[in-house]
Length: 118
Image (tube, rainbow, N blue to C red; front, side, top):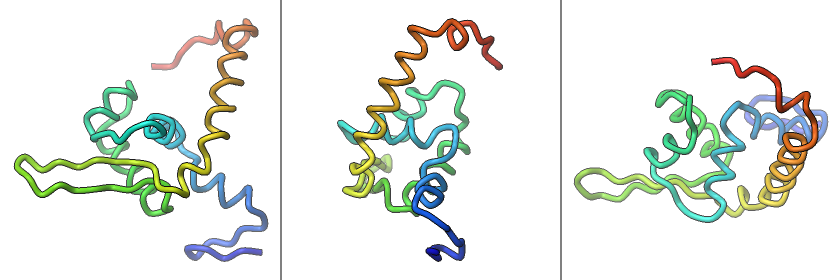
């Protein structure tokens, strides 16, 4: 049993799931694999996310040590987000999930024809 942040985990999958679960967290990390992004860039890449939800997800990822937030002291204030070395450890898993999801979309009518909730 592992105790972290006042939560008890019985295995590593529970811990990792807690760190990356959320509608947007894995997508945020995916977009940060190759380059740093500013808040507005991330928001533009994630249609449907609100500013408050993006802020919440970024704070949680930062708190868990998966992303870094760098503030540049200039006017207007500039903030960039990037993956930490710990976040980069998930790169291969994110790529595999992307590839598998793409195959599901291409080959399975069930997923292609599901109506999207707005």
